[in-house]
Image (cartoon, rainbow, N blue to C red; front, side):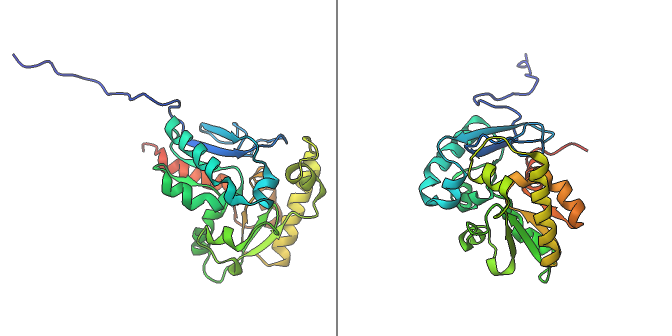
Length: 245
């Protein structure tokens, strides 16, 4: 008599999350995360999970010695991978400094900063295109961040949000947890508009994840391609969760 045939598919367990395409390593902050911010669960049409690194805030990453932070970032990324996420990103573009170390240590895709798109943006727009980066702080964005993303700092135009009171007091300095959404949008869009006009840009990359909630308004004001962390998250999600045609 023939042995009975087994039918069906094996659904493997052993992880905390299932069907969880994106894990986000987050700085500790309490200011609002409106829809369009990567830490708002309604921003994407697919699941994400956040892992907050307690005690590591924006000033510590931007203005402190960032090399001291690699160990907790690496530990948190390994936890997310073990928990079952399919790709890992970060909640601040300045995490670019950890890109190589984390990508080399994990098996899942790692994209710690919107700035990792820069080589692709350059190829898409050509060697003579004027590529701009709107960043939380031009002072804090160093050649090391560009080198970590295989990009020459001298080939990129940079504008920071220094001098924007609503943005700086809430998001950078953390003086208060509430912000005036209209005033914040006016500061961000106004800075982007002036930047694009003054530097005659051909494309704009948003370093800061807190700018992404206003990306549509920015694009309407400057009429240029706008790349940010959300465009990268959507791209990687498409790579790790293919749809059937």
